[in-house]
Image 1 (cartoon, rainbow, N blue to C red):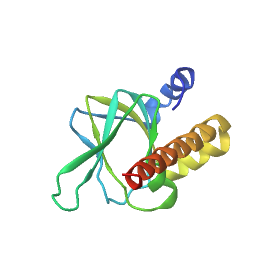
Image 2 (tube, one colour):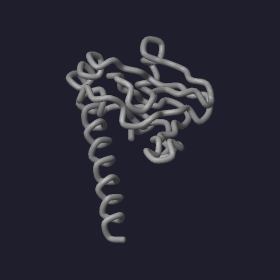
Image 3 (cartoon, rainbow, N blue to C red):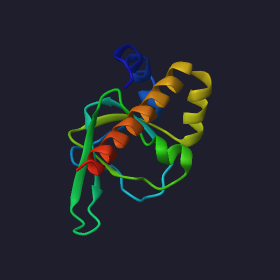
Image 4 (cartoon, rainbow, N blue to C red):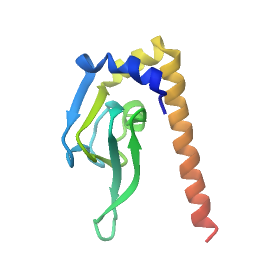
Length: 135
């Protein structure tokens, strides 16, 4: 998660990279090709996947201001692994892949936050798998 002082600095990029989504609006859809990376400036975003048997949406988690998402598709080129939907009106930064790579090159702090995000997500997924296997 990006800390509040770093978030204030990123807030200055809203004029160039900012996007606003209304409550209930989808930001990205599961399985769609996309390479954008997002930073939540204000509010929360809910992530969900379709249950393969029933096609009902299953909520995975909710992300809040200061969190980054979209890194898997941004850097791997693979389709989105989940849908992201604005919980209320949201303000985000949206970086195309080239811009995200440039930010990593020029801002070690941003690069570290991105690595922390990926590490935290991997740890949570490993913990969930371990819980499932130990049932």
